[in-house]
Image 1 (spheres, rainbow, N blue to C red):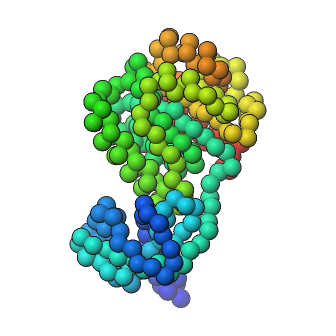
Image 2: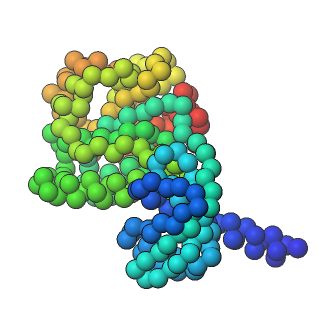
Image 3: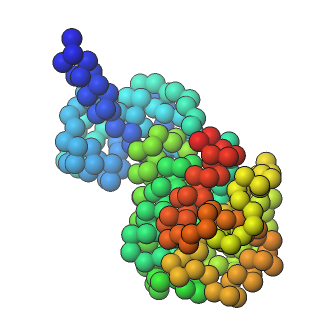
Length: 254
């Protein structure tokens, strides 16, 4: 009996969730994208007949099975549609100062897992990344793939909006009904003291090195409230994930 239970558990764990960026419907056949095909056929080495779940961002899951598996082509037969939502009741728009290395990638991945609804990478005065317009576009494509992979992993059926990189001043001055928040270790308010409007929160996190004096002045003039998350100075990636977790724990679904 025990080996049988383990076999069932193993089979369940092997059901892959795949993002498909086009319309889906039951009783139909779809050919997966190149990235998804490579993952299914060459990374997972899946076989025809195995169960899969597709989603396209419309809030539903589409269950099916692999109908054809080749190195460069994978076809899925869609059998059923299930409406499943694990979206947080709290809307969070993260404005994240862009940092070097894999810090930005890590923040995007974990923010998606924690349920943010929008992410805007911000080009700040102390931004450690200087790229041409073309390379920014490629970087955005890379970040988008990370966000999709995070949704596949965590079970979200709605993709958060990942905006193209924005200048700091442009983003902080945007009109919004969300409460505007940014972190400071010596702030007087904590997250539990925030009155959360129905529109949710706009959370601003600085890059490595923090904001310049001019940028801090701009946030004050734009109505951002400073919030403390303990007395210690956090790394940019730690600050983002910790702040989102705190907001979700107090006002969301954690």
